[in-house]
Image (cartoon, rainbow, N blue to C red; front, top):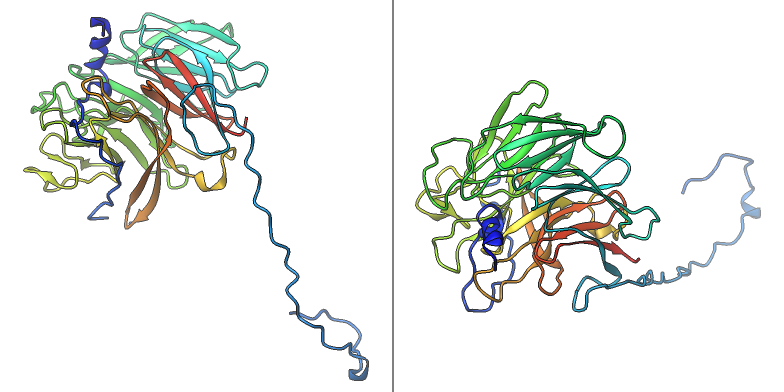
Length: 403
């Protein structure tokens, strides 16, 4: 592995360590242990002597045939997805780190080389036909989003948030403005970002260290920003590296992935999916897993856990109609894995969430896996397919039901 690549491992969740030489633990989910949430129509009267005889009741229901499994396409030998799903290559792009769609269905992508691209499927075959360079010159961009109802693009790069705007419609950013700067960085940096229904911009900020008392209260948090007024605030703490966040499509609740500390051995701690409650502490550095550690009083437990050091990153909820109905409102998480040991499973996991008091409990299962996978960003497209960036292979894949 090159020094250049190792540098990235110190800035993203992929730096998370690894597993024991034993078989990797099964993905598990742990509930939050302390949840805070015959009529007769009117007409002419018929004489009784003219009433028809009582009908014989018979079971005339015709058994319903199950819907046939659609024909699928698998581009990558060895890739596994549920029956009926296709797994194809959408585009080649150098080490993708962040994904977002515009209102026209074009995919904006940040790359580790500091560039921002626009990819478009012009003929509707599920594969990109064009690659437009939108902007360049960023220092490790890890997140990108578009402000709803505008063409304003926001990029999260090392220590700052930048506004990009195409003012003349040529698919190249004309305006470039730093809207937030001075975000603390170190072992990790600021991660992906998304607008909430309240119009504020939400973003994860990683810790500057593996285990320490942070000098800056913004480290290891979820923050939100008013991009119009410049206001900002911390809404949750104790999150070592919350790479991605997403809002539940029904409740509007905020969720975030997180990757735990590296000094507890190869079997601890588990990686997490957290329900983010304003003002809550999620335990780092003194509490991990389900209440383990010496500083767990007043902390929140994750709604779902993943393998130790597996690096849970890209996150989105399924709110489209292309997949079968049983996938509705499920969360999908990109599991990057680690380079520090062999045998750590990677791919995409499905988390089925159920209400539990004022929080949730999650059931975790594998959804997609493929050889040599290092999935990092993930998003549900407007076409209802999952788009996932494979950082190691410099590819964006598209997963759809049927072809």
